[in-house]
Length: 410
Image 1 (cartoon, rainbow, N blue to C red):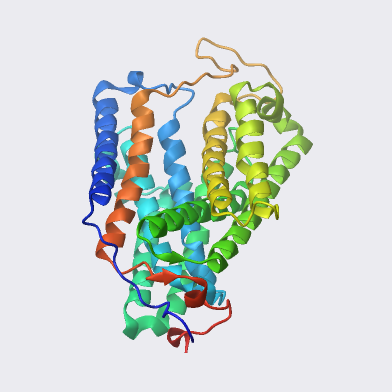
Image 2: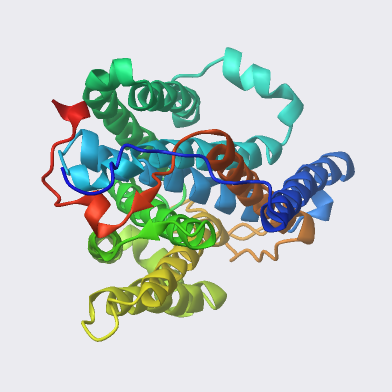
């Protein structure tokens, strides 16, 4: 193959002032997140915006967002190992590192947001296998093991021939992980905003879009700062793929709401989200549908602007923001609508049963969520400095056609 060897990986130079400043700020935000969790743990539930009605707040929004994005971040590696799209092969190592980093950040928030994070050992050792939460403990911890083995197969030349097997197993595991995360909400029949089997494929489609959007932003910014070549061929391939994933997530969202509108038992919550929900309705139409889906698809598919790196990055940013809004609507909006305790009857009590519940996130909750994001980015930033996971060049000449076969595939 002519051109630069795509299998030449090299660590980035992390001795500059900008890099050290980035590491410092990410460390500060990560530490602030731990401090916020400690503050909420010692001061009690009263310092948060949560209540007995809304028990999952902004920290859970960030946690679920990072967890499903972790699954999606591995997709580029799967495109190469599982589906034979060798144009994505240079990004296999980075995909695995990003998946591990995002999952670590998400689980950090999830564990610290628990009512008793100091008793996490009880949840891990005393399992109730009728609970979807118990299943996810094994899915999350197993994901670390599977992806680490997959990364090892890719980085150790002696084991490159096993990378396809490891990649296939990792692909199956990541689909299972996202299915399990979506099923947390799909299995909660008591809340009409959650009770839907389509939550699992919806979360899978969301993970594809979110993981790829984060990857595009990370690659374009890293290669620009490090002055490494990034050609249009690979970037445009990811652009097209991102557009398809956005459309798939939008499709499942439409199907979810149309299905609920058909079922009389879900008419109330659908009216709440789509028409009468105040901030949730505005967030759905403006944040999730318009800014998070339609505008990015225009930026990615319109021939007059879709060849610009700025447009692709802008679309990726909007997809990430739209994903956060969508997870917020699912988690918080689903709890804000009252429980269906006695179907067909109106329920009211001094405990606010039957009432729409209000929620305003507190500063410690937001700081904890951002701390998880900072932790994920910190792990990525350190990984590219100490591990050879970034190709020296992703130019068009280096990447070559999409159907090339490298020595590792023979």
